[in-house]
Structure formats: structure tokens, C-alpha cells
Image 1 (cartoon, protein in one colour):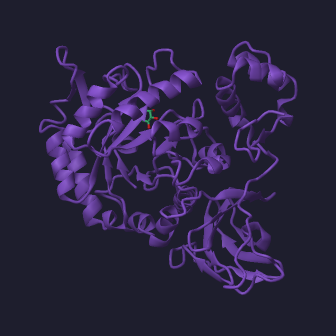
Image 2: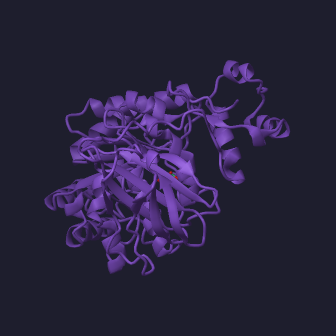
Image 3: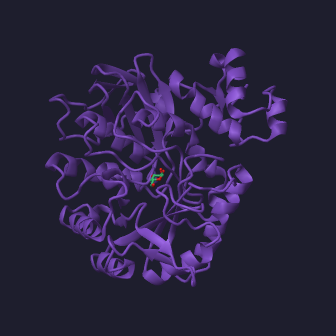
Length: 453
Ligand code: GLA
């Protein structure tokens, strides 16, 4: 949990901003809730020393140097994050770390850095899964070899299935998609697009492996309405994505601050069991139902309304979150957004018959509950897996999923399911003309993804 500079200022990052944000994390009370990382994203580097190979912080924008900044951030009880790329350059063209992993890891450790976001630009042709895993393993090994714990956050946009190789290279988290933008729906970078691309990856995450990173939050930025921001935050929390803020903490409104400070939602995100919620149902009217287990035996239930209009009296079968409808009541149902302005409507859910009925969910909004089982009737194992096949969803991201998947398969695998090996785009055309609409993504119990059937 913490903050990163990218969504707010892009390349225009400097040490004054980082200090002010660190101050704001403390003064807003967010640090106390666990938002303790202050992450400098791309553009802090200016060059590499030609004789020593040492990376140099931009003297214009970081005149005091990174060690002084680390000291300041640490003096507030926070942790400092930094950024590089597993390539010859960063995405903004600054020097990358490919081939300089050890010297960079040693430098970060000597400077007092606590967290590294490691991007995927200028990968020098090493983009298949072997090359990708090797590039990320090199930095993982370098970080493991220094005498300072540095959290390793992989950012290769979900290419080459980082949820598969991430744990082996020492990553604490891996980005599941390309970059987020501040829109709720309607584009490949929207909140719902990223959610769809990440929803069935829950089985790959957990405290002993690492976490799916759905990218930095857009809460508090202009493109999201109040309900949309709440839905975005709730979904990222329930799916156990790192909560890295991307708004201007120095000038955020009271509403935004209070939303980010919802301790009950943060507790779901930080729950020690660490199991991401999975999507257990999609209703025809556009409600996505997510459920997931929590360490104390409770479950978190999240209903995200993808429709623009509010929905009322939404029934969720008790079995969706593991309750046996015949025996599992009564139970406590705590509304995690109680007391927040939900268009003046209450969202206190009630068990009715074999359903839990949710009275109101705003358009593009969310309802989120923590549900406790009857002491003698623990919940059953429902979180599993949407076994069998899984619908792809809206048409415009099929190509994204297809190309992502295609790029990570061997020729042999592709041939075995009848996809001709040419290039991703030619294969996509072939797939569409042979009825791609009918293709579905499968996540069998083995955990190995086999999306095409
Ligand atoms: C990539 C990453 C972003 C950001 C930029 C910086 O696009 O995915 O999160 O770090 O690079 O250039």
C-alpha cells in the first residue's frame, strides 16, 4: 500500500513532490492505515556514469539525491520506492537496468530504497516467456544478493504470464495488464477492462506466492464518478491487488480521503489469508458478484454494477458465498460502505429464502459486505474456481487477451489446438474467421491456463 507518482505527474516527478506527498500520507492519516510506500516512478534517472556504470539521479529534479530523500521518507516512518526497466531504457527513455542488475540493486540498497517497480520497455528482443522470465530473474537474484530487503514489484503488463514465473524470481507482485486510465468502462485501459483481464487469475496469488497487481488506483482523479471510484477501490481491495494511490494527496477532497481511509475495506485487502476474491456470478443485468474467504472464516462479498442505472433488490444465492441455504443462518452481514453517501439509499442486505437480497446498488457502483457464518455452520468451499469455461466478456478486449495468450504459447501448443503459427495478428484473423466468438477461456483446476477450446 502506498502512492506512486505516475498517474499524477507522469515524467514530471521531482523531489519536492515526493517530500510533499510523504508529508500528506502522514497528515491525512493514510499512512497509519498502511499506505506507507512513496514510489518514484519513471524519469528520476538522468544517465549512467560511463566509467563506473553507476546510475545517476537527475540533478535538476532530484538535486539532493535519492539517499537524502530516503532519509526524509524514513524519518516519517514510510518506505521509499524506485523504478527501473528490465530493458536497455525505461519507457520514457532513461537508462534501464538490463545488464546492470547487480550494480543497480547494490546502489538502491546503499541509497536506502525499500521497493522496486521493474518495467518492461526496451527488452531487446527478450520478450518470449523464457527471455522475459530470465530478465526478471536477473533482477530478482540481484535484489536477493543485497543486504537490504527490497520489495520486488514486476511490471511486465501481464505478458508471458508473470503470475506463473513471478514467485520463482522473488516478485511480491506482478502487473496483470497494460496501463490503467481514469475511466470506468469503454476502453482497454478502463477499470472494468482490467478487472476482466485479472478476475480469473485469483488462483495464482496468495501470501506464499505473491499478488496480482491490477495497476495503480485512479481514485480521486477526474475521470471517475463517486460510485465508480468506490467500485474501483472495492474491487482492487477484494482481489488483493496492491493499493497504490495515484491521486494528488496534497489537495484531495474530504470524500476522496474518507473513501481511501475505509478501514474495513483496507482490512479485506490486507487480510492475512491473502486469498483474492473470485468472480462467482455475472447477472444478465450487469452485476458481477465476487466472493472470497477471509482469515477468520468470514467471507467478503462484492457486487459491482456494470450498468449505468441503479439496480434494486438484487438477489445473491447464499450458496454463492458458501452458505448452505438450509442450515447456514443466521449470520452477520456487515455493510462495508455503511455511513458513506450511496445516493441516499441504504444497502443493508437481508437473507430472504435462499438468497441474500441487496436493496440498492448505484449505477457503476458497488455493494460490499463482510459476512460471518453461524458459529456451528462454517461456510463451504465455494470460492473456488469458476471451473470449466469462463466467458470472455465484452468484444473489444478479445484481441488483447488473444494476443497476450498467443505470444506466450509454444509452436507445439498452438499446433495442438489447431492455431496456425504465423504471427499473432494473422493467427487472430484466423481465429476470428473460424468462429472466435465461440472460444472461451478455461482455467482448469490444475492451475494451468488453457484458454482456447
Ligand atoms: C509503463 C508502466 C507504467 C509507468 C510507465 C512509466 O507504461 O506500465 O505504470 O511506470 O511505464 O514510463
